[in-house]
Image (cartoon, rainbow, N blue to C red; front, side):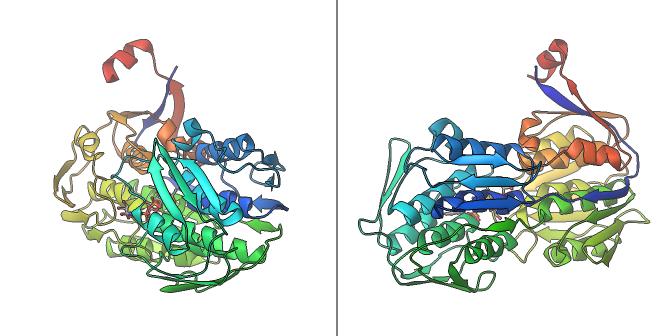
Length: 429
Ligand code: EPZ
């Protein structure tokens, strides 16, 4: 039976919550262990479904994955077989694209099924392909698989991205660290998880400089050794809790964060009248009055993260005044608006922009978690609304949030998981 998240809303969140490791850093780093035949120990790995699926993929390929604790894992990929990732798992994860760069980097060839991921746009991989070809590989994509071959291994070269892509930047690094010669990547993504990937690989003996800037330089090395490495905290999980604190009129401290990564969101929340205090690796967020309207435009880092767009739009449904949210990264990331309208939100989408007229309150309803971040936004809406909200299709939330229900309950929310009754199934199908 499917489960739902049941929320009795209207309770201000109060207390502190420890932020887990970053999903979007863990996924490329887990796959990057393919590049060394030595053992790697990774700490602060989030306990989420996308990570579990990545463990399953590495194991199915011949890797050894051993949990040393709830968030610490030992990985040994010396016996991994190129091209053996199972299609039924690969097709469920966007993070599977990293298998291509890692196989190409280690074996000089890659055979991977077409990746999956949240349905927020068509999600092409043309920039990934451009990078692989620049490194001397030939790429074919037919029959649902991507095949990349660099007969004598990858060769260092210059790569210029037409558009900023986190995945393509990460894949280029994976394919270039063991290449013959030097690779220069221009117009790369500058997200913290790109820096984290580079730091992990440098800890394994790679020679990468400039990650997080406009130019990344990679001097190919002949071999990488194992290491122990701790993943950075999840800036999107932290942002989700910060927005929930403001939406419920509460006061929440998020612990174990890197405040710098939250700068754009913190500034935006302060613009709305919230108070954001920084104390070491914690941020304390509160909002004494009704939040004021503002405009948001999503951009690659260090701009406003697209992965916080649904959560912020939900908060703006309760702000004083009319706000505009413009989504510039993905083509189709406003599908959740229909769900908010069921609660009395006044939102309409005009092309790339959602126009949001703040209302005094939202009313609980049955809401579908359409994708990972939209699902988190529905939980925020339920926490802020009056009455009871039931969020279903919660697997899409558990892909990327570690223990979100327990963490919210520890902040005072009236929230739990429950099975969906057959009669209810009929109502929501
Ligand atoms: C990563 O996706 C994240 N996923 C996404 O997070 C995040 O929204 C996105 O980066 C942007 O920050 C993971 O890290 C697993 P992109 P990715 O390549 O790599 C276009 C979440 O909620 N593009 O930066 O797929 C693409 O269509 C998820 O955690 C091309 O045109 O994102 C999109 O419009 C959702 N050609 C834009 O670039 C390409 O070859 C950004 O995509 C590649 C991308």
